Image (tube, rainbow, N blue to C red; front, top):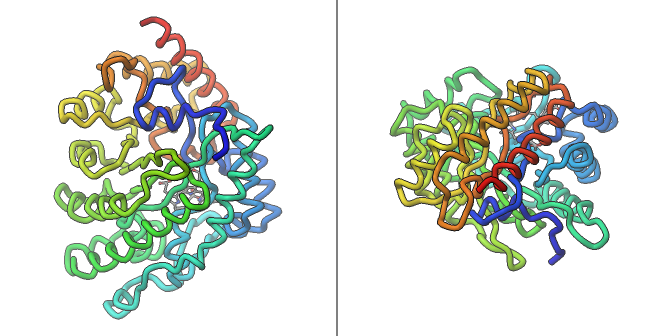
Length: 372
Ligand code: CP3
């Protein structure tokens, strides 16, 4: 096991004390960075990048060389699993992902099989290559996060066949043939669990489940479909590797009203979008006696407001949490928090906005800690 130079992120996930609040950003390696666009041009396409472990390693490291971030995240995509299931993934410039063979008939659903992990070797190779690239003078700079989509969010793309405003086909299947959707969710849950397990074996040190479209579901359906299938995944994951705990971060975009339900399924960290303040989330979790860590939750569009406003709004997120009770006695209220955006960074973000964000997170979170 290599020594970790900076373990703030893992400590915050596990609710342990840290000197300053750790920071990473969803989609931190992406189109807002000119160096990413240059590598993508060399690779020829997004999939050319993601399927080549050397390129995936290169772009994973790009934001780490620019900003003082406390975690790396595997460069890949959530749609690798349905691609490995044979649905035929394509990315069209300007239009996003689409599948040649969406699941639109009972026959297609019944033929679906758990993803063959040997089709996803390029992902696991990228994980181990990134781990090696993070080593500096014999020590690992920061930990590496692995990830997957949630069974429901994957099903949305698999059934509709592309991005959508309403995922009409997926929701229609849910309401009219819940048995078919359940069959897909079961296969997805087993695939996601196997995929995340292989990422841990290859070197991922924390795992995040992206339930980007859980927030579209009616109350009741969310718990039965999306949350229950994430619970199944979490129950199948290794929770320790190389003598270290593997924290699991769960993110349902638009899911803040279900925080109490989310707290029950075995995740270590709940990632929040910007619709609920962190102090409110902290108080709710403590009232339930579920002292879980939080991740989030700056609105990514604040990064368009210029450095002064970015510093102000970032400080407000920290001040708000600092006003809440601590997770446990002996901790500062800011412990048990990983700073992040409430969703992925926009491709139009000025790169210098992230510098202002990172400086504020470091300086202000240290200043607030030294006050008490
Ligand atoms: O966070 C990171 O830096 C790791 C990389 C990562 C990507 N996608 C790279 C990517 C992660 C964690 C994802 C997850 C992902 N992919 C999600 C869940 C998170 C979320 O944002 O809600 C979803 C829904 C997808 C599916 C997906 N991939 C869509 C809808 C698109 C097109 C939309 C868009 O932003 O262009 C992608 C493409 C994609 N995945 C890009 C990147 C950097 C941009 C593609 C490009 O370079 O052309």
